[in-house]
Image (cartoon, rainbow, N blue to C red; front, top):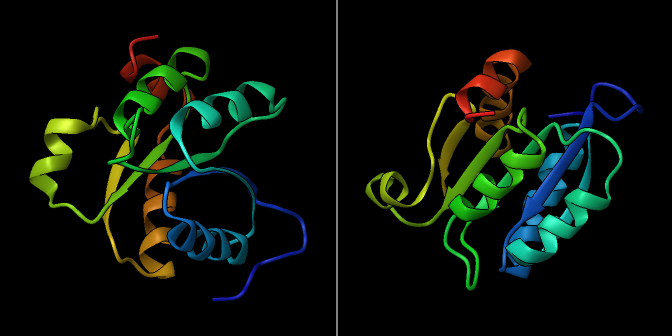
Length: 140
């Protein structure tokens, strides 16, 4: 899958405590045309998000991380960025995700490992949600 143009489609925040997974997903996001901000854990991701002046078009976060899981990260991010779209990724099953993640129409789940095509489809699906609906759904 080739990038459509040299200009970024937007900004993605990538959060995963596994360096090799983070590198692989970063390459996928870059191939899809996103500028990528990355963090190895939730607290660092919150700092990066707070310091980033522009929009975060998508957050791709591992669900199961030490100290702060992806569900908690998404909940906290939604307070300052109510229109944020989140893709939870995990090697665990959907059942674990349902218990650990705040799944709403502005959140989705991808089982690890996933392909660039699956990632692109998940992003496209989330981008169809209007910002006003996203804000309403996250309780803002």
